[in-house]
Length: 107
Image (tube, rainbow, N blue to C red; front, side, top):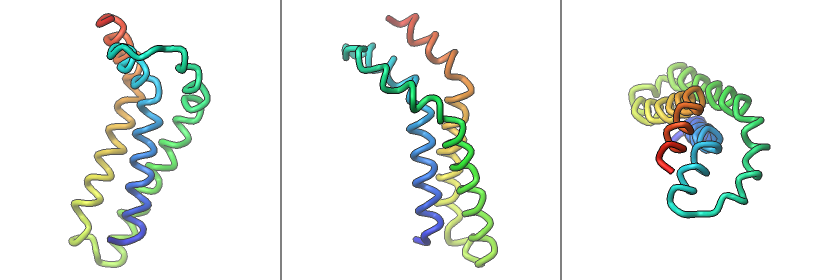
């Protein structure tokens, strides 16, 4: 696998991790884990939009480089997976308040 596709997946996974930094603790509290450690995620949440923007740029550059090198046909599904992961991270970030409200109602 090409290095730029690996970099694209690294960016996508980090974007997904940053996007779930405020939703995941609520879900873990529903599972019975304590909530005193939630303060750790405040610093991560402050940088979430920057990480998401950088990962989106990495995915776009990966598509461009694959197209330019003529390897788009071979790497298309890897790039689609990376793009879908980044898109999921954006959806979670934009709907974070609604997801948290739903999880609070479940408590």
